[in-house]
Image 1 (cartoon, helix red, strand yellow):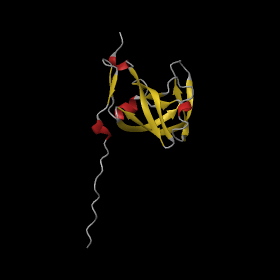
Image 2 (spheres, rainbow, N blue to C red; image 1 turned 45 degrees about the vertical axis):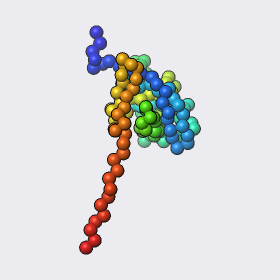
Image 3 (cartoon, one colour; image 1 turned 180 degrees about the vertical axis):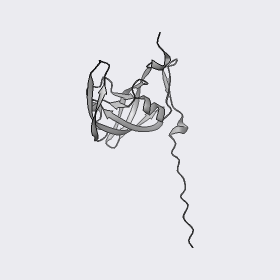
Length: 140
């Protein structure tokens, strides 16, 4: 019997990713078992310029004791149900998916996975920017 705490849940959907160099539709895996969001480096060209990480990260794989070295990241916008969201994605060489939305991104944007209907839900209110009017100091 698998406990709910250790259950890994995934749903896959195409999403539009947008960067400063262009946009692409990528078949994206929503994976509650992956902490961070990742993208296959092959799909970053034409989207955005990657940035080197301050320190190399070793990402564990499903194979025990096997790690993948990650040296770059990229910041991308993506659309989920016509709602504009954004986050940082690690460039993972040899990633089997085009892109993965991990648990940290899902928590940040309060993304919910509906397994009964194989859908992904996001509240559009979460993504609205809060702009506040700056009050000028009184002139004495």
